[in-house]
Image 1 (cartoon, rainbow, N blue to C red):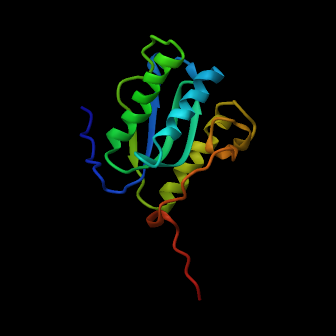
Image 2: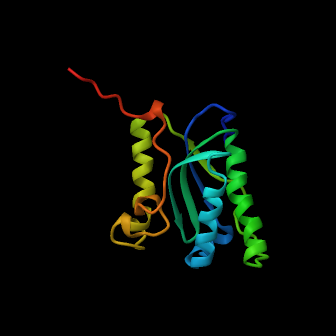
Length: 160
């Protein structure tokens, strides 16, 4: 039995979110699909969520985000927004996403750094590039303006 989802309504928490394509189809190997996904991801930024880190893999995405409303609404805007745009812009009639998404609430600065590193290194581990900054569909490439780490998750620096 799957545990109940932790309530995530306007709590200013940051989450590591993952969603998979239907049947794990590698839809995002196609540049048009990948660029459209990134356009959608950043289209709803500010209004619905902050994007701290992300990577778009051929058959899934990972994102560190802080929703302005509910986590479910943020995921709906990303997944549903992309599905709608794929239907309109790419004439796709495919089921794009597996149902639902997985999430992990980021607990502290160390947890944030672990997940940020995992996201950046995902394409390296999968053999899509040699270094994270070489992968064009991730925040580690330096080609995207990302939101800073939330204040409450920044490491505390003690001065003497």
